[in-house]
Length: 468
Image (cartoon, rainbow, N blue to C red; front, side):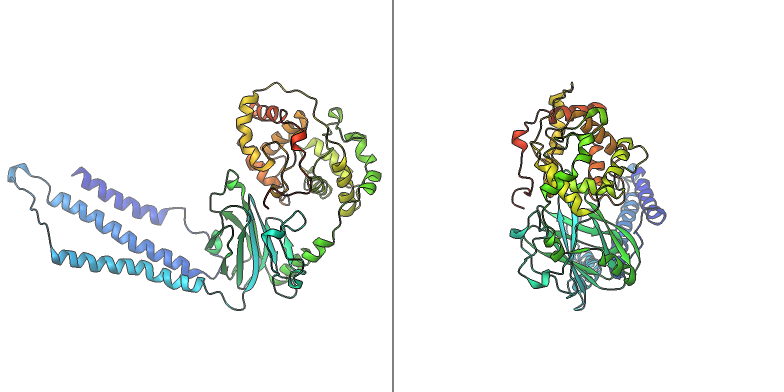
């Protein structure tokens, strides 16, 4: 009898939770209402079966429960053709009710409109980037063999259609409202999955293959992009934004983006010019980029030029060093403002990168063995030897002073650094730093980094991670 009561309570509780639950679909922002309808049909069919089966079991338990005074025994019936026929028919109808709408929607999903606007999504550990067609409306051809530090998407430089392709290397994509969009999906490394809950569509990115999805955005706004396929220890930080704009706002954003032709016209930094600009930096960072702890200035010699460019640009534009608690970052921000433009930033970064690497000479008393275990997570981006990886946007760590690394990890962990809306890669480090439980963990992992030999971490500055 108690079991029957439990089954009835289970059914009533499940129905109540279904209708009263605060967790439901996010507001739909695309034309795929049919996907919601299909899910709802599945809920109703499976819900009806769940209710019927559990209430029938409760009824059977009550009606046919054992009564010692009646000395009644269960009747064994090995076959019942009539009952089996009814069960087969009802089950077939239920399965058809679930599958038919899904097949109907899938037929629409795999056939995007001929006039759909096309763009490319590239996934990699752990970021999203995008390539949009230029004024010719055609995406140029690309190949993984052409991917390098100067050609993030592997666009074929000999394909005229690719010259005006628009490159978006941030995690933020803008698209116009009311226009069908087909997303071509590529992965550089492992299996990823591009998903935006409000658009009701998602699809895997499979290395070596090109998949796609499509939808028509129906609401303006900013929507979260998630990777819904476990892609490594940094899977949880692989987030982005899709902004749906009115056509005029979209065009303003689009005009601000760089084209493939423009990206290829950007030359390497001029070391000689950078040397002439460096005396301003030397006042704090030292003539050889050795750093000065008394001035809270880290060692910068030999750091990858692409990382230096990114950080100086962030300081110049208030993306870094603007937080009220970033006391020392606020010192650097006005200094970066003295560099006139991106060319000057590139020149001085090239010069700093050319300075000989200098090993850190400070010692940190901590648990190196424990730090080695913690560093396994760091190594996925920064390299086993702390050499840094362009593909991961991860700087070189080996040779850096302990005090500076400790402070930056504390800043990331506290949200002092990496939380600005325009910081493209800081949010990844903000999330990763929080796996370090306390200051002891931070000191341990930094102590281990100090043991990494500098000479083995002197990777070619302009190289990408192997095979990319």
